[in-house]
Amino acid sequence: MTHPTVTVRSLLAVGALALSLTALIALTALCPAQYALLARPIPVAERFAVTEWRLPATSPPFAAILFVPATWLPVATLKAVVVAGNVLLLALLVRLSWRFAGGRPAGGRPAPVVLVVLCVALALWLEPVFRTVLQGEISLALTCLVLWDLTRPDHALGKGFALGIAAGVELTPALFIAYLLLTGRPGGVRAGLTALASLIGTMLLGALVLPRASLDFWTLRVFETGGPGAGWSADNQSLQGLFARALHTPEPGVGWALACVGVTFAGLWLARRAVLRAGHETWGVLAVALTALLVSPVSWSHQWVWCVPLLAVLLAEGRWRTASAVALVFAARTLRLVPREGGAELQLPWWQQMLASPYPLLALTVLAVLAYAAYRHRHRHRTITRQPATALRLPPLPPLPAQLPASNSSASTMR
Image (cartoon, rainbow, N blue to C red; front, side, top):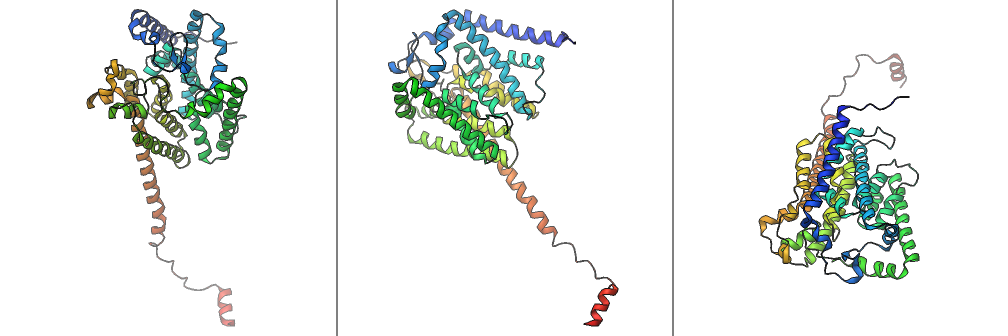
């Protein structure tokens, strides 16, 4: 029986993780003003408010059923469990991103433990991950569910079920169902139908346990694009937030709606083309993830934890400079630097718009690059397909033999 050996690399990785967690705890304790927003009342309707701090929440009723066990623990214990759980989920997301970026099947070689620990220590300081751990959000859990399901083989039993559960908790992942159906592959279509059935199952369970809340949510609240809180806040990193801040109005109106429709169709088309034409399923999944975050009426900054798989894919492809630039965008926290008091986000000058909307601008840039890559791939494919037709006209016909075979000669004499 062999035992794992303790190496210098493993000790350094564990030390980096311990130092990162210690710094996070120290920052939380020494900078309480950074987190006073959690205890500040938010002016939203009572039916949207939860907890004694009146935090806004508009998830489907199925999510409320899943979170009931959280009420059984004391608050202090629950905080510790949530922080520890999110750190473990981050480690799981790093391993899933390793498999996702490398295109390995479910039984492929896992990421080295040392690499996972080191990546967790660094990823904790990406703003979406930091906010998820700090605020006790479920973004890491939902991303792990979706990414685990999508990286399973097409023939895996029940593929799509976890995706439907994630969409039942928060509607944003539902766009992946359309992606699976649009790819047209038998395995993808089967997974998409499974996810759709799973989502409908969560709706039926919610209606059975919470009938009035389900009726209110699925007939009224699901169609409200405003959502709780201020959609124009810099915390909202969706297209709606970007348009509201850029147009200096809390109601971006028809322009934002048309942009969402266009981005949705473009994102799904790019994802389908990346999978079927270029064979790049990683970029297809990332295109759908970024599109879903863009077109959602409200995409809080902690929901952009898809930055972890994005960075993994860039690093796996050897794009170190691009990965460094993307990591800088998600670690810089520029959205926290703009004026935020008294609706100041609606009065930002043009040069502060990029600071207030770093994530949607980055996502739009990625989609634009994918569109350019699709154009180049199509142009190159057309050039290659034209060449054989031209080549067939160039070689001369082979010369006739000097003397026909005897059988042919006899046949000619007989005629």
